[in-house]
Length: 115
Image (cartoon, rainbow, N blue to C red; front, side, top):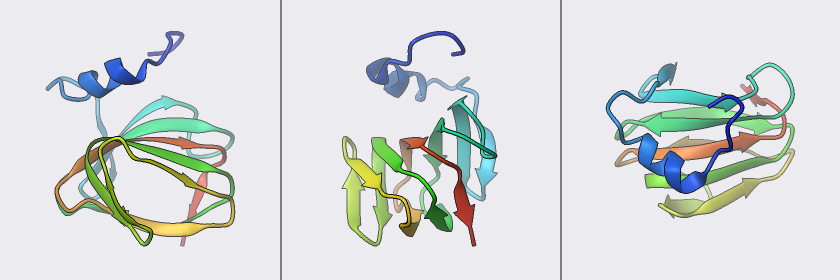
């Protein structure tokens, strides 16, 4: 996707294709980076959660924007179905899981810090 516009409606369809390029991120959670990295600066990625998979507690040093494209994601603030936008401000932290599996677009202002 380098150099091309990222269109949310197209992206939501592409992730359903069997040859979409996912890489391991956490147990049961795969990642597809759109830009940036986990070391410095802003970045964006798609996260694909298998049913019951989780991302452990982490802190946000910058804003984190999450858009649920498919399925449901759960954190301490509630249950977030498809179409939900969650904005986590700097200084906040949470763990996240998906009871039925999901795909989320995540945009980080700065990398997160895992405990």
